[in-house]
Image 1 (cartoon, rainbow, N blue to C red):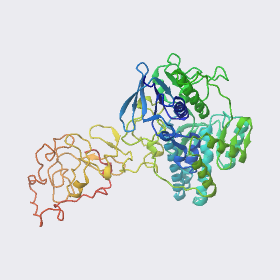
Image 2 (cartoon, one colour):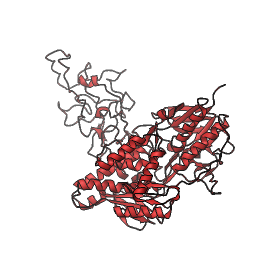
Image 3 (tube, rainbow, N blue to C red):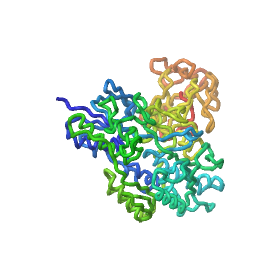
Image 4 (cartoon, helix red, strand yellow):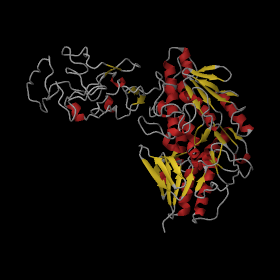
Length: 634
C-alpha cells in the first residue's frame, strides 16, 4: 500500500510546527513535502534586533532540512492550486516551474505587508516582514547617520537623521525602541557636525501604543520610548509620502529619508485564488482547522480564519502565538484523517501573556497575567524567546552577552539594495533579483500594483540620486535601459553586465551575448554598439545609420564602426557580414579592406602567443568608457 502524500505550503510558525509534529506522528508512514521560498524558518520576534545590529542574521533562522527529519523540502512559491485534481503548481527560485500532488494539503502561507491607499507609500516606504528588509534597514540607517555626519547643510543633516516608523504595534514599537538606541550609539562615537541627535518618530492612528495589549503594558512602553527621545504621536499617521519626506494627517511636513511601514499584515494573496469562503482575506475553517466541504484541505496561521471558541463569534488574531499552536492541532488532525494518529481535536487556547522587547534591559511583559516592567520584564522576555526558538539558543544567548560588553559594529554590508525589497510584494522573505523570475505579479495589490515587476521607478529610498540608489553599471544594480524602438524600460540582468561591459548580441536578436575571456585577451575588438552614451541620467541616443563617427582615430571612418563601414545588424538594418552565416564584414580580420582607408602595415612578427595580432586590446576588468553602462541594448 502506497504511503499518503501530505503537502504543506509555507514554513512560518504554523507551517514549521505542522511539519515538525507530522514528522513525529507519522514516523515515516507518509510522504511529507514542505514548499517554502527559503530553506529556513525565521523567528520573526527577534527581527528588530537584527536590524539594530544586536543579532547576526543567521541567529534568527533555523535550517529546515536539519531540523525536520523525514520531510522533503522543495524551494519555491505556490502559484496555482487545482483542488479538484489535487495538484499544486509552483515556481522555483530560478524561475523553473514544477507540480506537486497531494492527498492532504495544509495551507500555512503566512502574511505579507498590509498596504493602505496612501499616495507615495508603496514607492517610498519599506516593510519589516522578512530578513532582507531587516538587513536593508540596518544598512540604510547606518548610511544615513554617516552621510548626516559629513553633511554641510544643517537641514540635510536633520532630514537624514529623522526616521519615521508608522504603526505602534509589536513590530513598530520594537523597531523604534531599538532604532533609537542604535543611532544614539553611532552618534556618541562619531558626533554629528551640527551637534544634532537622531530623531525617531512613531506614528499610529490608535489612541495609545500597543493598543492590543493591557493598558499598563502600553503605558510602560510609551514611557520608555519617550524617555529615550522617541517622538510618539498617537492619533496621527501619514497622509502622503514624497521624495523629500512625509505629510502627516495633521498637516505637518516632516523631512526624512526613511519611512518604515509597520502598520500591520494581510494574509498571503494565494488563498484568494481558491474561490472558497473568506473572512477579511482569510480562509474560513472549522474549529478543527479543516475547510468545510473539502476534507483534504486544512489551513492554519495567518491565512486561516479560525473560530475562537473562548470568544464565540470571533476569530483568533493573526499572531505568532496562535500560528504556533495552530500548527500542532493541524498536524494532529491531518494525521487523524489519514488513520495515522488519534482522534480529531478542536483548537482551543489559553492566553499566557505578552512580551515586548524595548531594547537594553527594558521590556514590557505580563506572563500569566502578572504585569512586569524594567529589568524583570527584560529577563522574562529574553527567557521566553530562548524557550520558544526551535534552535540556535546558545548562539542567540552568546550574541546578547557580547552586545552587553562590546560596542556594536555599525558598518554597511551592502548585501540588500532598496529596489530589491519593495513594500508591495507577495514575497517579503525573498529579496528581488534583477532579471529574476517574477513573484506572483497577478496577486499584487495596493497603490504600487501598477509598477513594473522588476523596475525601480526612481521613487522611495532607492530613488535616483539618493544614497540608496544602486550603483549604475554594477551587476545586479537594476539600472534600466531602453530597448531601441520599444519605448519601455527594463532592468538589466546580471548576465548582461558580466565583467562590467555591455555585450553584443547574436545576429538579428537584439539580445546580449557573453564574450569569453579568451576573446578579449586576444585583442579582438567587440562589436560596436549603435548608441552613444549620454550624460549621467540622460538616455543613450542612437546615431543615424551611415553617419560618420566623429573623433575616431584614422580619419573619417564609416558610421558606428571603428575604421569600417556601418554594421548592418543595428536596429533597422541588415545583419552584419561578420556574423556567423554571413559574408565577412569589410575591414575586419580576414575580410576586404574598407575603401578609402590606408592599408594596414604588416606586423613585424607573425601573430602568436608572444606577439598578439595588431589592434586595440580590450581590458577585461574595467569598461572603456565610464558611461558605457548607460548605453542601450545593441
